[in-house]
Amino acid sequence: MALEVETESKRDYAEALKTKFKNHTAVVAVVGIGYVGLPLAVEKAKVGFPVIGLDRNDERVRMLNRGENYIRDVKDEELKKVVSEGKLRASDDFSELNNADVVIICVPTPLTIHRMPDLQYIENVTEQIAEHMRPGQLISLESTTYPGTTEEVILPKLTATGLKVGEDFFLCHSPERVDPGNKRYTTQNTNKLVGGVTESCTEVAAAFYGETIIKVIECSSPAIAEMAKVFENTYRAVNIALVNEMALLCDRMGISVWEMLDAAFTKPFGIQPFYPGPGVGGHCIPVDPFYLTWKAREYDFSTRFIELAGEINLSMPYFVVQKAERILGLQGKSLRGSKILVLGVAYKADLPDLRESPALKVIQLLIKEGCEVEYYDPYVPSVEIQLQNQGIDEDKESVRLDSISDLTAQQVGNADLVVILTGHSCVDYALVVREARAVLDTRNVAFGAKNPIGNVWML
Ligand code: SAJ
Image: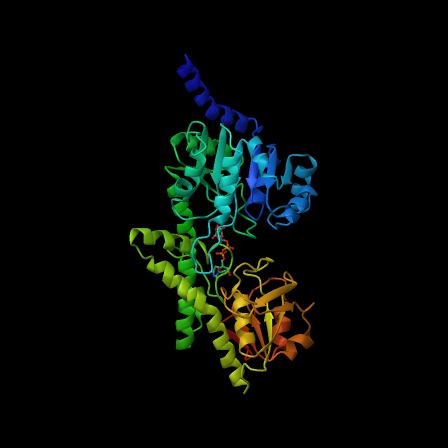
């Protein structure tokens, strides 16, 4: 009898959760309410799920509970609405995990200064989950990480509680696929991978995500979903490095890489547009592929494409400075003592995000060469420039720069060289081209590469 009842109750956890998903009564805890977690939390709250955002960042918790938005990809009015309806709230009290039917992990997965995976956030959250765990919960890891993390790092901590995966609790990896600033693809209409530790885990997770995401794709394991996500970002890193290498070669050959790429991308099949730049920023592309590099070593495998792509992308800020030196040389000037005006420091256009921004490296190099650097970025009021490479802990020397308030003809004309590092669409590039002594445009936003005016140089 006891066995029968027990078997019955085990089947109930999965069914009970699916019922709660169907009627949107499942309590959802989103751990990490940043650029991945907050949009997801709002999406779930919008369809009626009671959602709690858990975060160590008190400021974020306070702002969310006041209905104040801090993530551009979230609509202010949508956040305000779900908070005022009591559907979404935030807390830094992780014991609330016990009330949750679903726990979604959206914490950062950075690299250490020696480019090794830093899983401290995932490990800390997993320990909190284990501490407050109860039967009948779905746990989903959304943070991008190396294949194996879900089953080798998270699963053991959860089964150590005595609960059985696939029966008492359900565990999966469902990678976030957020393109910051992308107006067309949102959390809701971006296909979602789900890879469960067991079949019932995949089923339960797919039932949850299917309530708010148009298409859910089931994978046979968490490792498939983990590997697919890292591959997606590696694909971008390698292709960006390819066009960056073309920029280096075209520079040497006196060919406009921009005109060449425009020509190549007229091919209607078998090619996807990528463009060179001053380097690769954001928290994904410069980081995620090295999670795979690190894991591959366990299998005596070296991911040469990833390493080479990293080398080329990391070399681009140095190339920008070399090119600046060449352009100043044409004016009989050297870098030392020249006035440089940098346009844009965010890692990509029309965003305020500085994470891993190559512009910070370019500015550091220019300052170390003795340039007088000013910058203008309407999205970024000030930046802290480390003047030593990462890893030198003691008294890290740094300099703070404030963006000039607005871009005037006088400020542009005052610079020996204007360097465009981020192509914000709100900037008046016609003014820049008209008033500048010289412009180095690393984003092909100032003028068509076909006929640069005498004072505009392209990457
Ligand atoms: N970049 C280039 N040339 C290109 C494309 C990008 O130099 O042709 C640079 C950008 O300026 C930026 C960096 O690479 O500094 C990364 O840009 P990104 O748009 O590739 O990456 P993220 O981090 O803004 O967003 C990405 C997603 N982007 C797209 O799919 C377009 C995607 O790779 C991931 O879903 C997401 O990060 C993530 O969170 O993993």
